[in-house]
Amino acid sequence: MTIDDPAIERRFENYLKRESLKMTPQRRRIFEKAFEVHEHFSVERMYEWLKEEDGPAVSRATVYRTLEVLERGGFIEAIETRRGEVVYEHVLGHAHHDHVVCEVCGRIEEFQDDEIEALQRKNAYRLGFVMTGHLLRLSGICPTCVKELQLEGTLEEKLRELGGPIGLLDESA
Amino acid sequence: MTIDDPAIERRFENYLKRESLKMTPQRRRIFEKAFEVHEHFSVERMYEWLKEEDGPAVSRATVYRTLEVLERGGFIEAIETRRGEVVYEHVLGHAHHDHVVCEVCGRIEEFQDDEIEALQRKNAYRLGFVMTGHLLRLSGICPTCVKELQLEGTLEEKLRELGGPIGLLDESA
DNA sequence: ATCTCTGCAAATTATTTGCAATGAT
DNA sequence: ATCATTGCAAATAATTTGCAGAGAT
Image 1 (cartoon, rainbow over the protein chains, first blue to last red):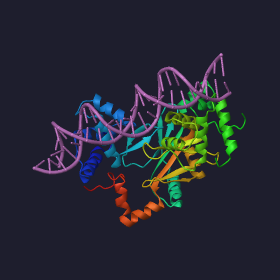
Image 2: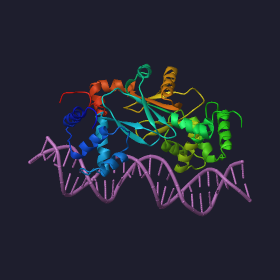
Image 3: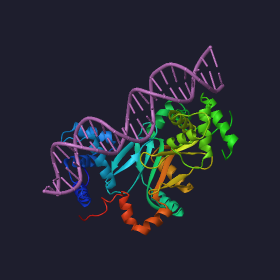
């Protein structure tokens, strides 16, 4: 673990205690890995990591179960990349942020915008909702891919290949 | 179909032609149903609707395949409700909008905010991305559910039951 | 006539679950 | 000692796919 280690791990222990859950070697390994890496990870990747490195074995089922615990506790967050793909990232208590995902290479960047947050709350409130959370994910093409695509053809062609919505655009047959 | 029928259906036909796809009775049924209903629907629900009503039979596989075509064409949009649940809604060429989903009952409301859209674009641009789309989904508790929950207990208790992140909140053991 | 679609059933993929043994408090 | 957790393998659930026959242009 790289940042804030003992503090955050103690919180995890406290959390478990408070919820009458137990600290096990498996949970510790998963927790530590989640905070050690600085990438987004899927269930499968976490499972692979732990299998490669040595330490108490961790089954896939346990990874699923533990990530769920971590998510409930607010230690990690799930991000849905595109339909079907779920990746996680740890939360360090640092300010919340949202993501921009590159449609081409999958690269994920983060950003944070208080104005957007405020406007979201305003809109929920206007509809009578108590807002409890949000998911904001921008899709786009990252600087690197934009450059590459421009070498090969027009951006529009490429967007088309990516399966963009083009049915509503033209009136002509 | 209720709104703008012939026009939108002709667009669909054009789209198919342009992509060398064929108009089949199955595709027509699915398309028309998608624009007839004013609800969000899942693959399964669409399948059930078509099975109940009469007309040319449509298999589940075809529903999957056709909804994908419709999505690519921009005729419908997929919304991911919560992890795993995907529902669709038709697009009428009307302004884009986002959603607020009730955590308790699943009710979905829509809103639209140009300021948010502009800020999104700004953030993507700042990171060097060409923005191609976005997904914004607020979670919350709808007016009805808020009322019900207040009858039974504190909102906080209930949020806790819903599995809110509570691990990072308190420092104390 | 040609090339796409459809339905079916099998295959895949992702995730969940029952249960007996193990381990944490 | 008690009660939660683990691993396994079986069970689910959701979606995809191969293929032969049917259908659209």
